Structures are given as structure tokens and as C-alpha cells.
Image (cartoon, rainbow, N blue to C red):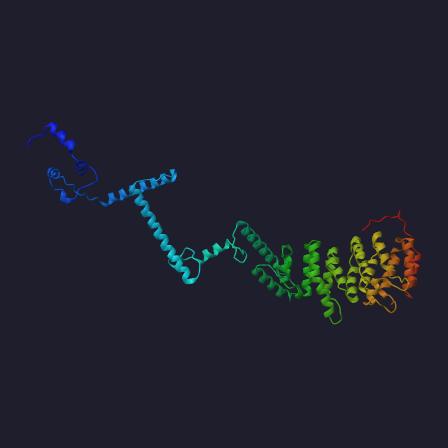
Amino acid sequence: MGKLTTSETKVKEHHKPLYKDIVHGAGRFKTASQNSGRDSTSEQKDGEDQDTIIDSKATRKILQLAKDQQEEIESEENRFGKRVDDPFVKFQVRQQQDEDEDDFTEEYDEMKAFEGSDGEEYDGEFEGEEEYVNEEDAKLFQSYFKSEQSFPEGSFNLADKVMAKIEQLQAEAERKNEKPVDAVLLPPKVIQAYQTIGTLLTTWTHGRLPKLFKVIPTLKRWEDVLYVTNPDAWTPNVCFEATKLFVSNFGSKDATKFVHMVLLERFRASIEDSDDHKLNYHLYRSLKKSLYKPAAFFKGFLFPLVEERCSVREAIIAGSILAKVSIPALHSAAALSWLTEQDFQPATTVFIRILLEKKYALPYQTVDNLVFYFMRFRVINGQVADSVKNYYDPANKPSEIPPMPLVWHKAFLAFAQHYKNDITDDQRDFLLETIRTRGHRDIGPEIRRELLAGVPRTENTDERMEL
């Protein structure tokens, strides 16, 4: 076959179809196998258009390009409000709308069927769409919101959650503050150890005390620890050793608590339970040791004993302790001032007489309180003071004015003997009037003689400090 001329080559290249370039070139489109063996010249002569088959990869790319083109056209329509007249685009848009309508119709039918079966509203989920929720996750989710009882309208805003949290914290704080009066907040091991020590102290009489007991005064919660040992069951020997230990190591405030908690009840129980109504010797020594801190003795023992209206025998036994132990003058003066302000009872007068017989140089304020104390027992127009009236007749309607007890006359005589030079002339006249109306046949003349023998007090001589 001869070579083609240049003109023929140009003509053939000019009239060569694009199909030939696609098939024989480097493109991705390939012809079917049945057309590969045919001669290109015969195909050109026949002039028939052969069908081509596109592979799946190319098809996906074409569809993706079409979809991108469709989305671009729709965005342009939404932007400029124009319609596109491309038939292919219109077909794709219409097909997508039909599919959305079919999906909506199916969901609507399912919703109507669900409402018709149970009569409940559709919430967007069916049985097939339910998911398993862990109980811990559900509790954690509910903890962030309050229940419907707290929110009748079903609102869950931030302010409601904050207020709910504040109320919860306040309720917890109140529950923590509300504890039993006799509660002991101590570790179980500590309670067990000191209960064992308390059992040992119920029979202890001599020897060394346990080391755990000796360290109680150094503890911050010493009251609770001491309560665990059950002080009511201690032997009197333990009370004496404990008084020396605690009173010497404590300050006035803590020593007052110890004396009131341990010694006061043991003192009254010992006198009441004994056959001869006497105080145990070791408890007597314990009270004498407690006077090492006078303020603790008066505030923790003497004043509560008077407020509980003790008997005269209890007052005489406790007063004998006061008589044997030296007490600072200011503490005695403060105790006398407090006793004169109480309602009349014989036990109070016993303590007043014992403190007066110590012959301390009392401030003028205390002396004036004692004068007013004895003056209020005068009989004026057939009447006495309410404090005296309440003692003899609780109904406040005495048929006659009873005589004063002997302890009162003894206390009056002690005051006249030791403080007759510390009163004024007016006070002496009032005291003489009291002796005239409420005197004793044997002690009354002695009191009158002592008062008349005294030198009146002047404001410029021997000024004493006030209490």
C-alpha cells in the first residue's frame, strides 16, 4: 500500500471524527469488544453510529458532576431569584421534591397510626428507634434538673437550678447541725478504748492511773472523752485524783465545767445515799482541791447548788469546806453579792454567815448589798418583802408573820460584829428597826449592842475599791 500524500493526510485528519480520537487516544472511554475488530474504513463507509458502554466509575463521576451543577444552579436561583430553563436541572429538582414528599408522607402515616393506636402524641421516635440508657446516666441527667413537682410549668432555666442547689445545701447544713444532745462524735476505736478505761475506774482505789486517762486534759474534745468514761461510776478515789489532774491543768472556764459535771452530782448523791447523810472523805478532799480555782468552785459548784435549793445539811457540809480553805477577798465579795440577790432560803444564809466569819475587808459595795439584804426582812405595816413571803407561803397569803430561822440571826450577828464600822448612820437605823421587828430573844440584844458600839462610816475615810 502506497504512502499517502500530504494533501490526503490533511483531508483525512480534517474529516476524522471525534469518536476516533476518543477511542484511540488516551481517554477513559473504551468501545465495546464486538466493535474492536471492525475496520475503521468500513465503519466510516457505513456511517452508522455505534453505541458506547460507560463503566461504573465514570458513571459515578458524571452523576457527581451533575449533582454539583444542580446545587450550584439552585444556589444561584436562591441568590438572584432566577429560574433556570435547563431541562436536566428541572428534572433533577422535580425528582428530589418527589422523594422528599414521599418520605414526609410515610412519616406522617406512621405518626397517625401511632396516635390512633395509643391515643398519645407522637414524639418523633418509634419502638424500633429506642436506645438503651444506663441507669447511672439517667440519674446524672436528672440531677441537673428539678422534678416536675418543683416546676409546675416544666421550665428548667438557670435561675431555678441555682436556687435548687442553694436550698439543697442549706438543708444539708441544717441536718448536720441537728444532732442529739448526748451524741459523742468520736472515732469508734477511741470510744472503745475509753469505755474500757471507764470500766477499770469503777474499781480503782490506788496505784497509777492509765496513761490514756492522764492525757484527757490535753485533748480538744475532752468533755466527750470524759463522758465516755462514765464519771458517775468512778470510785471516790478516782474523783480525788481526777480533780487534782484536771483542776491543775485547766483554766478557770474548763475547770468550772469539770467541777459542775463531776463533783456536783457526786456530792449530792453521796450525802443522799449514805446512811448517816455524810459526805465521803475522798469527795470532801476533792472539793477542797477544787478551791485551788475559786472561780471554778463558785460558778461550777456553789452557785448551782444554791439554785437547786439544796438542804441545810448540804449547805453546812459545803460551808465547812469554805471555812477551812483560804479564799481571795474579791472572790468572797463577789460570792456574797451574788448570794444577797437570791430569794431567801436558810441554805443561802449559811453560806453568807461562813463567808462573813472569814473577816475579809469587803468593798463598800458588798457591805451595802448585805445591809439591804437584812433590811428587806423588816415588817412594815404588817407586811414583809415578797422574797420572804414566797419562802414561807407559796400562795402569798400568810395568816401571820413567822419568825426568822436561827441561821439568819447568826448571819446577822456575824455581820454586826465584823462590819459595824463600815455602815453609815442611816443604815444603822434601818438595821436597828429590823432587829426591833424581827429580833431573837437571845441573839437580838447582842446584835443591837454591836450596832450601837460601831463608828459610822464617812465617805472620806479609808476608801475601798468597788467590786
